[in-house]
Amino acid sequence: MRVGSPLESVNYLKTGKIIAYPTESIYGIGCDPYNYNAVKKVYEIKNRPNNKPMILIASDIKQIEHLVDHNTINQSVIDSWPGHTTWLLPASSTCPQWLYDKVSKKVAIRVSAHTTVASICNNFDKPIISTSANKSMDDPITKIEKIRDTFDNEVDFIVEGCLGNELKPSVIRDLETGKVIRG
Image (cartoon, rainbow, N blue to C red; front, side):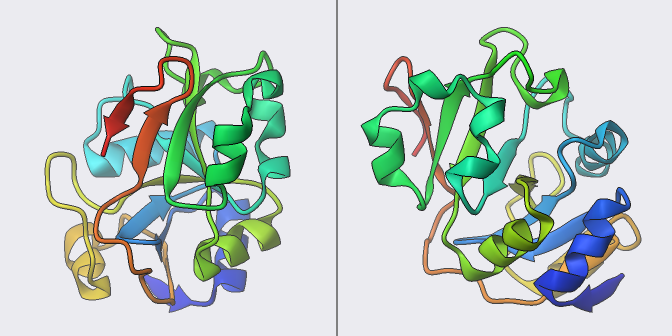
């Protein structure tokens, strides 16, 4: 498991590898969301049910516009980004089916201002998968050493950087219902 810069992580993403990286509150695990095999591998290493979609994180709304019905993006969403709020938004017809919930047809998206996340997404020029760095049902990881212990050879690259100042993972809100799914 190699450790390096956000820029170096992009080479791993482009080749279908899995990265771990700091976010606003915890470490995340990510990959290229358009690479089905990489996304499948993230589900496997987390022991996460594949009917539970993961969050996409971007550095700019332009990186996700084609994934959602952009006519539904309202001022509340725009005002919360970049920020620590993930929105469940109606998926567009061009959104890969493994990225959205099959029942609700919604995709979970956040636009982040976190320096490391923004650098990864800016250099990759698209969003990445963002799920907490932990095995399913375990507590999210906040220490880089724990990533090595938990994921051994399952994660290919760890991005250097600091966690942000948030105490909990992002708030998840449903745009259509207004409900807070995770607070």
